Length: 468
Image (cartoon, rainbow, N blue to C red; front, side):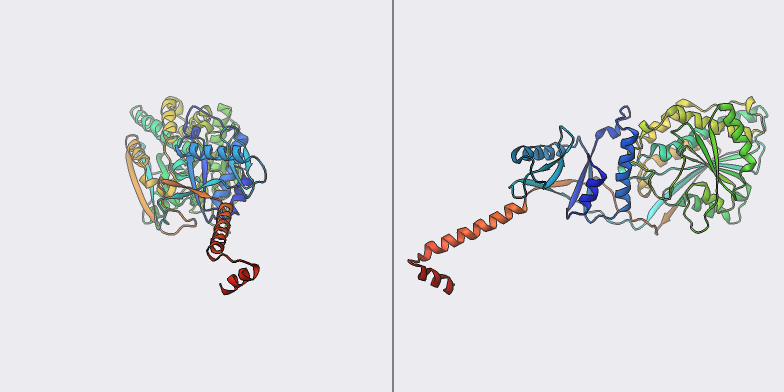
């Protein structure tokens, strides 16, 4: 079991590489072996890896990789041979899953040195993609409500950064809502029900880079256009897949109290424990705690709806264990339906009872299951097929869909190329073997030298080495 203490110890050693073996159950939808306590403990390890510099390579592999049994078997054989005395190295024994110290410092045992064939290189620029679609009112309204979520994820292992709750749940909400409201607006039009607002569904990149995608979307719409001036509310959805309570975060400058009574009314009807938190927007920094704050900085009325009781400026909410097993599907569906009811009440002028606004549970389940299999780590998401799927699904559920792509050349963190690396395991001897081997050679050469010269007495022995 990898602990934070062990990791801190290893980081101060002069090791050349570290291989962390992950349980293959991470990728199993039907197996949940992680308690909340274990999840919290593993998050501490992830945060340590994310926020500290290491002068050695760190590799990750699953415990079903063919090299792992060989390494563990070698470690077990050494433990059996040399016993448990003074600690020299530490390893995870495969059967007991406990840390064991191994052998005395002068034992002549084998160990492995791990080396990757390919070298990672720093990424000079990062490509980001925003996607947004519009469901238009038949009344040709000029007013908009924006429903948005960031679509990227973050984690210590990019290829395992699924982020199902943070923020796959927000993505699923956006996709479920557009799927429902496109049909609702079409039906409302045929039944002569007036829709007060156009709905703009926005999926942004850069969620873990201070919501750069949101900034870019606003920058491109400032110009001479009127879109931003027509937005009455930006509803940001963030991590709504867990927890009985639901939180709405707003700021003193947002002016979102115009809609506060609607949220409270629907929450009361659905018996949801809704907590509205008003926070002061920080002016001493551009860093945002919540998604909506970036819109508020641009004078838009915005709020964030989340199941999280608090948010931090760092990435300490991320985890590669954030998979579908950490989601309560009933809670997720309830929260999406809550947002649907609120939007129906706002957009349809109180006529929401005349038009079906029930979210498709089947559609929701299919989307959250899909995101559970697709890593969306920000700097590499342009390589993933999920963006094509998002574009296709948005186009089939909207009147208009646009793609916005941009490149960032300056970023706080440094990212490297990521690929599956072929690891070579070299069998090496300990320093004790090298020392004894050297002394043995010196002794052998000494005897060989005496044998050739054959001194007959002590004086000849001294003369022999004096002449040497």
